Length: 225
Image (cartoon, rainbow, N blue to C red; front, side):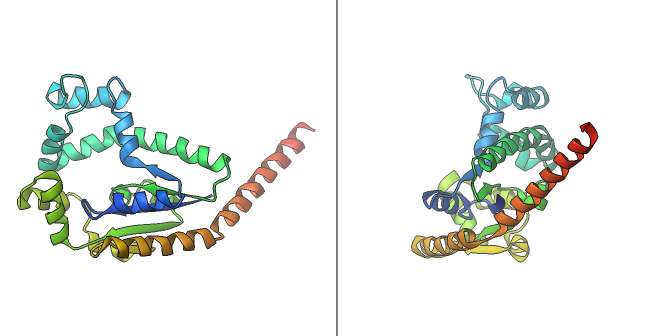
């Protein structure tokens, strides 16, 4: 099984592309969903966040007050790095289990939907292909204003907290241009899906893993028999 890293910038349309790939039958491992799971009340990451940020970032029912936490971390890069250090190890563990389950059930590839794929770089070496969803900065600001009711200054502050989209585009295997119509984006996603289906990368990886298993079994046979 090979892995496809899907990323973009805030409000670039990554979720739209992820949903379109899912509709086409792709298995999606969504880092944002896993991030919500690992900070559920009582979970290890939740306890660490409460310890470092206090009850001010909790709602009355114990769940994270994401709006309040967002205000804190986007205004302070050091606190943003702290939050990432508390949550990312738990997210990566959950992601690994998802990938393992997909592998043993025989899937040829999986799409890892990771907003900070390039920023953290932790899982980037394991991606066979990377896909960046791109649009203009002005479109990002406009979408953030409509979706999150942010001022232009607040929107650009959140955008500045990530690697610029233009830089991600330069290092991506594939780029989905989401600056136009939904029909245009859908066509690009379908074309990309066909490329993944035709890829032979999963056979090469399975061959390597099978060879490693045979070597291991050979060593065990030699040692014990």
